[in-house]
Length: 246
Ligand code: 5GP
Image 1 (spheres, rainbow, N blue to C red):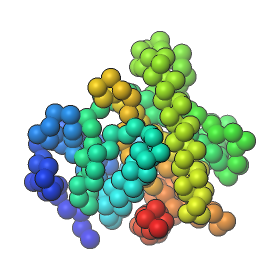
Image 2: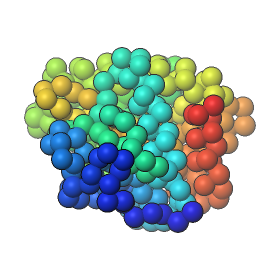
Image 3: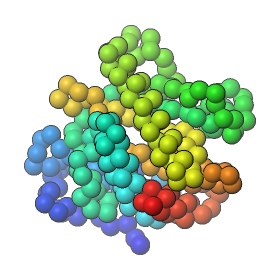
Image 4: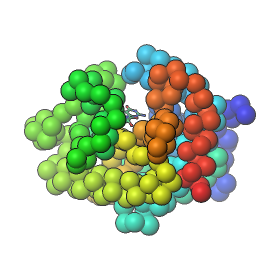
């Protein structure tokens, strides 16, 4: 299927102006100033956009996976920006003032942690590793600590405490959820924002933002297949959707 252009309306919600176009998603205004449409593209980038490509139907798969995961997390008491899925590629979300931080939670070594510490991939960590990164494409999302965040006023101490607790809770919930689906949750990235004075989970949770390994075989079912030119990228994303919907 080829990527469709954003439709002029999504069910009962009409598109307003395009507010922001990122590497994988577009945000549109709606008639409600508190809500936006988040549109999922097939565009894929890696290594700070040095590598660019397309993963056919990725937008549809990621929208469906993220919608299912946000719905499940909300039921577990996690407050998210998700309102509802509108169409194959669109979800309605609450408007957030983005906190310029990315949280990474790690359960098994991979990617950045291996590069930073010179260790091999696949070591099961004794306890989950929580990391703050400063959200900056120009700087490659550098690892930072609480002191940097407080000194730069990126967030308050109370917000940091809340985001950290929410992230640990989300990790516990997702680990159990994917274990049932015979998937090892290696690591993932979360973003949070402010809405009416409250901190909400934003962005997406999908094979673009997580590392998923098939239990036993350790077959990669995530964006690392694109990053490393491993092939079978589309089928890996479809397999993750199948397991999430199972
Ligand atoms: P790492 O730091 O090892 O590159 O990434 C850790 C986890 O967070 C991986 O699951 C990766 O997909 C996700 N992640 C970290 N930064 C980004 C980012 O800027 N964009 C996306 N899509 N995922 C990220």
